[in-house]
Image (tube, rainbow, N blue to C red):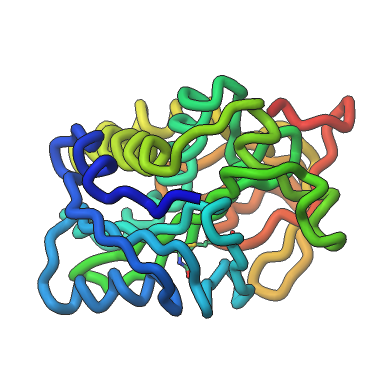
Length: 266
Ligand code: BTN
Protein backbone atom coordinates (compact mmCIF):
# COMPACT_ATOMS: atom_id res chain seq x y z
CA UNK A 1 0.00 0.00 0.00
CA UNK A 2 1.44 3.41 -1.00
CA UNK A 3 1.72 5.99 1.78
CA UNK A 4 -0.88 8.73 1.65
CA UNK A 5 0.36 11.49 -0.71
CA UNK A 6 -0.42 14.80 1.02
CA UNK A 7 0.77 16.95 -1.89
CA UNK A 8 -1.53 15.14 -4.33
CA UNK A 9 -4.46 15.63 -1.95
CA UNK A 10 -3.68 19.33 -1.47
CA UNK A 11 -3.55 19.86 -5.22
CA UNK A 12 -7.06 18.41 -5.55
CA UNK A 13 -8.53 20.77 -2.96
CA UNK A 14 -10.40 23.46 -4.81
CA UNK A 15 -12.56 24.95 -2.09
CA UNK A 16 -12.90 28.53 -1.02
CA UNK A 17 -12.41 27.89 2.68
CA UNK A 18 -11.06 24.41 3.26
CA UNK A 19 -7.73 24.40 1.50
CA UNK A 20 -5.50 22.37 3.79
CA UNK A 21 -2.68 22.10 4.60
CA UNK A 22 -2.84 18.30 4.76
CA UNK A 23 -0.47 16.66 7.25
CA UNK A 24 0.22 12.93 7.33
CA UNK A 25 1.05 10.83 10.38
CA UNK A 26 2.28 7.26 10.08
CA UNK A 27 0.79 6.41 13.47
CA UNK A 28 -1.00 8.59 15.96
CA UNK A 29 -3.37 8.06 18.87
CA UNK A 30 -6.23 9.87 17.13
CA UNK A 31 -6.25 12.40 14.30
CA UNK A 32 -8.93 14.28 16.27
CA UNK A 33 -6.38 14.86 19.04
CA UNK A 34 -3.78 16.03 16.53
CA UNK A 35 -6.15 18.55 14.97
CA UNK A 36 -7.34 19.72 18.36
CA UNK A 37 -3.72 20.50 19.28
CA UNK A 38 -3.26 22.37 16.01
CA UNK A 39 -6.51 24.23 16.67
CA UNK A 40 -5.33 25.27 20.13
CA UNK A 41 -2.05 26.47 18.56
CA UNK A 42 -4.02 28.72 16.19
CA UNK A 43 -4.06 26.65 12.98
CA UNK A 44 -6.39 27.85 10.28
CA UNK A 45 -9.73 26.42 9.25
CA UNK A 46 -9.30 23.62 6.73
CA UNK A 47 -6.18 22.15 8.36
CA UNK A 48 -6.28 18.37 7.88
CA UNK A 49 -4.41 15.51 9.57
CA UNK A 50 -4.57 12.08 7.97
CA UNK A 51 -3.16 8.96 9.64
CA UNK A 52 -2.15 5.60 8.24
CA UNK A 53 -2.88 4.08 11.66
CA UNK A 54 -4.42 5.17 14.95
CA UNK A 55 -3.63 3.53 18.27
CA UNK A 56 -6.62 5.03 20.10
CA UNK A 57 -9.08 5.92 17.33
CA UNK A 58 -12.41 7.05 18.74
CA UNK A 59 -15.94 6.43 17.52
CA UNK A 60 -19.19 7.90 18.77
CA UNK A 61 -20.77 7.00 22.10
CA UNK A 62 -17.45 6.06 23.69
CA UNK A 63 -16.68 3.34 21.16
CA UNK A 64 -13.33 2.80 19.47
CA UNK A 65 -12.63 3.03 15.76
CA UNK A 66 -10.32 0.42 14.33
CA UNK A 67 -9.34 1.19 10.76
CA UNK A 68 -7.07 -1.18 8.91
CA UNK A 69 -3.91 0.60 7.80
CA UNK A 70 -4.12 1.66 4.14
CA UNK A 71 -7.60 0.18 3.72
CA UNK A 72 -9.29 2.89 5.75
CA UNK A 73 -9.18 6.64 5.21
CA UNK A 74 -8.89 8.27 8.63
CA UNK A 75 -8.60 12.02 8.92
CA UNK A 76 -9.75 15.08 10.80
CA UNK A 77 -10.49 18.61 9.63
CA UNK A 78 -10.41 21.82 11.64
CA UNK A 79 -13.47 24.07 11.32
CA UNK A 80 -13.96 27.49 12.81
CA UNK A 81 -17.66 28.12 12.20
CA UNK A 82 -18.71 31.75 12.34
CA UNK A 83 -22.37 30.91 12.95
CA UNK A 84 -23.93 30.79 16.44
CA UNK A 85 -22.78 27.81 18.50
CA UNK A 86 -26.38 26.46 18.59
CA UNK A 87 -26.10 25.99 14.83
CA UNK A 88 -22.99 23.83 15.10
CA UNK A 89 -25.26 20.85 15.68
CA UNK A 90 -26.03 20.93 11.96
CA UNK A 91 -22.42 19.98 11.19
CA UNK A 92 -22.82 16.23 11.77
CA UNK A 93 -25.57 15.58 9.22
CA UNK A 94 -23.94 18.16 6.93
CA UNK A 95 -20.61 16.34 7.00
CA UNK A 96 -22.28 12.94 6.57
CA UNK A 97 -24.03 14.27 3.49
CA UNK A 98 -20.71 15.55 2.13
CA UNK A 99 -19.07 12.14 2.59
CA UNK A 100 -22.01 10.33 1.00
CA UNK A 101 -22.08 12.76 -1.94
CA UNK A 102 -18.35 12.50 -2.61
CA UNK A 103 -18.33 8.71 -2.25
CA UNK A 104 -21.26 8.44 -4.64
CA UNK A 105 -19.55 10.62 -7.24
CA UNK A 106 -16.24 8.81 -7.04
CA UNK A 107 -17.48 5.26 -6.55
CA UNK A 108 -20.53 5.43 -8.80
CA UNK A 109 -22.75 3.56 -6.32
CA UNK A 110 -25.32 5.48 -4.27
CA UNK A 111 -24.35 6.14 -0.66
CA UNK A 112 -26.66 7.52 1.99
CA UNK A 113 -26.56 8.75 5.55
CA UNK A 114 -28.02 7.15 8.63
CA UNK A 115 -28.86 9.74 11.23
CA UNK A 116 -26.99 11.19 12.92
CA UNK A 117 -23.46 10.48 11.67
CA UNK A 118 -23.13 7.25 9.69
CA UNK A 119 -22.51 6.74 5.98
CA UNK A 120 -24.22 3.65 4.62
CA UNK A 121 -24.91 1.54 1.57
CA UNK A 122 -27.41 -1.28 1.41
CA UNK A 123 -28.05 -0.74 5.11
CA UNK A 124 -24.39 -1.44 5.91
CA UNK A 125 -22.06 1.10 7.44
CA UNK A 126 -18.98 2.13 5.50
CA UNK A 127 -18.05 5.27 7.36
CA UNK A 128 -18.66 7.37 10.42
CA UNK A 129 -18.01 10.81 11.78
CA UNK A 130 -16.98 12.12 15.16
CA UNK A 131 -17.35 15.83 15.94
CA UNK A 132 -15.52 17.18 18.97
CA UNK A 133 -16.10 20.84 19.67
CA UNK A 134 -14.34 23.53 21.57
CA UNK A 135 -16.93 26.24 21.18
CA UNK A 136 -16.80 29.05 20.37
CA UNK A 137 -13.29 28.66 18.93
CA UNK A 138 -13.34 25.56 16.74
CA UNK A 139 -14.66 22.10 16.11
CA UNK A 140 -12.76 19.02 14.99
CA UNK A 141 -14.49 16.85 12.42
CA UNK A 142 -13.08 13.31 12.35
CA UNK A 143 -13.96 11.00 9.49
CA UNK A 144 -13.28 7.29 9.07
CA UNK A 145 -14.17 5.48 5.85
CA UNK A 146 -13.62 1.86 4.90
CA UNK A 147 -12.16 2.25 1.42
CA UNK A 148 -10.65 -1.10 0.43
CA UNK A 149 -11.47 -4.74 0.91
CA UNK A 150 -14.41 -7.12 0.90
CA UNK A 151 -17.17 -7.54 3.46
CA UNK A 152 -15.76 -10.99 4.27
CA UNK A 153 -12.51 -9.32 5.44
CA UNK A 154 -14.23 -7.79 8.50
CA UNK A 155 -14.12 -9.51 11.89
CA UNK A 156 -17.13 -11.79 12.47
CA UNK A 157 -19.00 -9.30 14.69
CA UNK A 158 -18.97 -6.65 11.92
CA UNK A 159 -19.33 -8.87 8.86
CA UNK A 160 -23.10 -8.55 8.60
CA UNK A 161 -23.26 -4.79 9.15
CA UNK A 162 -20.09 -3.23 7.68
CA UNK A 163 -18.93 -2.66 4.14
CA UNK A 164 -16.34 -0.75 2.11
CA UNK A 165 -16.46 1.71 -0.76
CA UNK A 166 -14.74 -0.85 -2.97
CA UNK A 167 -17.25 -3.58 -2.06
CA UNK A 168 -20.28 -1.43 -2.90
CA UNK A 169 -18.88 0.28 -5.98
CA UNK A 170 -16.53 -2.27 -7.48
CA UNK A 171 -14.00 0.55 -7.85
CA UNK A 172 -10.69 1.28 -6.18
CA UNK A 173 -10.86 4.96 -5.32
CA UNK A 174 -7.55 6.51 -4.24
CA UNK A 175 -7.51 7.81 -0.68
CA UNK A 176 -6.13 11.19 -1.83
CA UNK A 177 -8.94 11.59 -4.37
CA UNK A 178 -11.51 10.56 -1.79
CA UNK A 179 -10.19 12.89 0.90
CA UNK A 180 -10.15 15.83 -1.51
CA UNK A 181 -13.60 14.94 -2.87
CA UNK A 182 -15.02 14.89 0.66
CA UNK A 183 -13.35 18.13 1.71
CA UNK A 184 -14.54 19.85 -1.47
CA UNK A 185 -18.13 18.67 -0.87
CA UNK A 186 -17.81 19.71 2.75
CA UNK A 187 -16.65 23.13 1.64
CA UNK A 188 -19.73 23.52 -0.57
CA UNK A 189 -22.25 22.49 2.09
CA UNK A 190 -20.43 24.23 4.95
CA UNK A 191 -20.49 27.37 2.82
CA UNK A 192 -24.29 27.05 2.66
CA UNK A 193 -24.44 26.84 6.45
CA UNK A 194 -22.29 29.95 6.84
CA UNK A 195 -24.33 31.81 4.22
CA UNK A 196 -27.63 30.94 5.92
CA UNK A 197 -28.85 28.77 3.01
CA UNK A 198 -30.50 26.42 5.48
CA UNK A 199 -33.40 25.33 3.27
CA UNK A 200 -31.08 24.16 0.47
CA UNK A 201 -28.83 22.42 2.94
CA UNK A 202 -31.72 20.61 4.59
CA UNK A 203 -33.14 19.53 1.24
CA UNK A 204 -29.79 18.00 0.25
CA UNK A 205 -29.47 16.24 3.60
CA UNK A 206 -32.98 14.82 3.33
CA UNK A 207 -32.27 13.45 -0.15
CA UNK A 208 -29.44 11.33 1.34
CA UNK A 209 -31.04 10.34 4.64
CA UNK A 210 -32.05 6.67 4.69
CA UNK A 211 -34.12 6.55 7.89
CA UNK A 212 -36.79 9.05 6.86
CA UNK A 213 -40.21 7.41 6.58
CA UNK A 214 -38.95 4.27 8.34
CA UNK A 215 -39.89 2.70 11.62
CA UNK A 216 -36.89 2.99 13.88
CA UNK A 217 -35.82 1.88 17.30
CA UNK A 218 -33.29 4.17 18.85
CA UNK A 219 -31.48 4.96 22.05
CA UNK A 220 -31.38 8.57 23.14
CA UNK A 221 -30.27 9.95 26.52
CA UNK A 222 -30.59 6.51 28.10
CA UNK A 223 -34.10 5.91 26.75
CA UNK A 224 -35.26 3.51 24.06
CA UNK A 225 -37.54 5.28 21.57
CA UNK A 226 -39.68 3.71 18.86
CA UNK A 227 -41.46 5.53 16.10
CA UNK A 228 -41.46 6.63 12.51
CA UNK A 229 -38.65 8.94 11.43
CA UNK A 230 -40.51 11.92 10.00
CA UNK A 231 -38.11 14.69 9.22
CA UNK A 232 -34.77 16.39 9.89
CA UNK A 233 -34.43 19.90 11.29
CA UNK A 234 -31.93 22.61 10.37
CA UNK A 235 -30.31 22.00 13.78
CA UNK A 236 -29.42 18.43 12.88
CA UNK A 237 -32.27 16.88 14.89
CA UNK A 238 -34.54 13.99 13.96
CA UNK A 239 -38.32 14.27 14.28
CA UNK A 240 -39.84 11.01 15.41
CA UNK A 241 -43.57 10.18 15.50
CA UNK A 242 -44.08 7.91 18.47
CA UNK A 243 -47.23 6.53 20.07
CA UNK A 244 -46.98 9.36 22.58
CA UNK A 245 -46.78 12.02 19.85
CA UNK A 246 -44.03 13.74 17.90
CA UNK A 247 -40.69 14.25 19.58
CA UNK A 248 -37.56 15.97 18.39
CA UNK A 249 -34.39 14.02 19.10
CA UNK A 250 -31.10 15.91 19.29
CA UNK A 251 -28.67 13.07 19.89
CA UNK A 252 -28.94 9.33 19.81
CA UNK A 253 -28.21 6.15 18.03
CA UNK A 254 -30.57 4.41 15.62
CA UNK A 255 -30.40 0.73 16.51
CA UNK A 256 -32.74 -0.79 13.97
CA UNK A 257 -34.62 0.42 10.93
CA UNK A 258 -37.67 -1.22 9.40
CA UNK A 259 -39.23 -0.13 6.13
CA UNK A 260 -42.28 -1.35 4.30
CA UNK A 261 -40.15 -3.70 2.26
CA UNK A 262 -37.53 -4.20 4.94
CA UNK A 263 -34.92 -2.57 2.74
CA UNK A 264 -33.15 0.74 3.06
CA UNK A 265 -33.27 2.97 -0.03
CA UNK A 266 -29.49 2.91 -0.37
C1 BTN B 1 -18.27 6.42 14.46
O1 BTN B 1 -18.76 5.88 13.48
O2 BTN B 1 -18.57 6.08 15.61
C2 BTN B 1 -17.32 7.57 14.24
C3 BTN B 1 -16.00 7.08 13.74
C4 BTN B 1 -15.00 8.21 13.53
C5 BTN B 1 -13.62 7.68 13.25
C6 BTN B 1 -12.68 8.73 12.81
S1 BTN B 1 -11.17 8.07 12.20
C7 BTN B 1 -10.46 9.67 12.16
C8 BTN B 1 -10.93 10.39 13.40
N1 BTN B 1 -10.07 10.10 14.52
C9 BTN B 1 -10.70 9.43 15.49
O3 BTN B 1 -10.17 9.06 16.57
N2 BTN B 1 -11.97 9.20 15.14
C10 BTN B 1 -12.27 9.77 13.84
